[in-house]
Figure 1 (cartoon, rainbow, N blue to C red):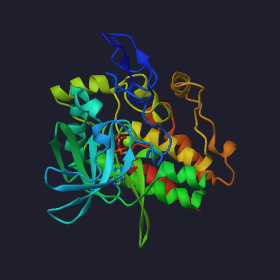
Figure 2: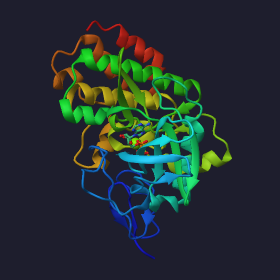
Figure 3: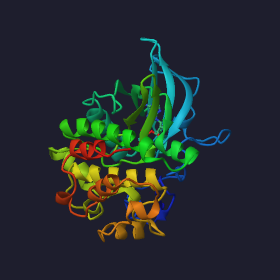
Amino acid sequence: MNDAQCPKCGTSYPPPARFCIKDGFPLITGTQASPALHRTDETRPPGVRTTDPAGTLEGRVIDGRYAIEDRVGEGGMAYVYRATDRQTGQTVAVKVLMAKLASDPESVARLKREAHLAMKLIHPNTCGLLSYGEANRLPYLVMPYLEGETLSTRENRIGIMKPKQAVPILIQLCRGLQHAHDQGVMHRDLKPENVMLVAEDAGERAVVMDFGLAKERIAGADLNRLTATGIVLGTPEFMSPEQIRGKSIDHRSDIYALGVLAFELLSGELPYAGATAQETMLNHLTGKPKRLSTVASNIPGGLDQAIERALKLEPKDRFQSMTEFAQALSRISL
Ligand SMILES: Nc1ncnc2c1ncn2[C@@H]1O[C@H](COP(=O)(O)OP(=O)(O)O)[C@@H](O)[C@H]1O
Ligand SMILES: [Mg+2]
């Protein structure tokens, strides 16, 4: 049997390995495996083509309905295109599972689950879902198109954000995630790549995307099987200690991840950094993050404390809800 490869970082493993020990991604076999971009700009540089049929759909019409225009994004699982819905005339985003994952039942199940969960979300700070389908055996999602730049692109473009810019974004993310939690949906993979900033008349709207690793609070038998594998999924830099340990997690794991995201946004650093993914994960278990005000200047006291609280080792010591986190952020005088 061939070695299996991690679609995220490209590391190879001999059988019977099923998961990447670096980032927890399910392994795939086959010659098409290639490392995906991660924590960099999601869009491949212009001129660099992929051989994945799911990555070269520009100009095609899917299911006689969605006229694909440009590819606008790429994550660990899928390619995302801007398209026009010929039935409604609406500009939409079509997320197509990478072909190399389309033959992997777990990846297909994850995309279907993302569809099932995202369908429940109707809030300005979460990305909803319009439909799910399969064309030429490639499963795809259709979402409202978000015109903007991801938070990771913004970070790369302008660098560290001042509290005055960052806090309103964080409050919006709290609201979107509180909505998801109210529907019983945990995100589990919150990071700047999964947040879109959309320019609007009233200012900027921050939208949580990519519920691909999300989990329902009340899991049925099938979901249990999926989440039994899901415990190792996530992104090491943003994973909560309980997620790293593979313990059962709840919405307070998202609160931790938002704390890490906030820390990075304001300082350009991570509260726990390690030379390798494993070292990063081990550091998260120590419960001793860097203090924000030691690595960033002009941090108001309340902000330092709020982030410290979100990053507590024990979920019970953190904010207990996103609304509580948002309230603490709202009290800070900027
Ligand atoms: N609704 C959308 N509108 C515009 N761009 C999007 C939309 N959804 C995703 N993208 C872009 O595609 C990228 C990958 O999407 P994501 O859902 O995170 O896929 P993956 O599950 O592969 O990580 C995002 O980082 C973003 O740049
Ligand atoms: Mg993503």
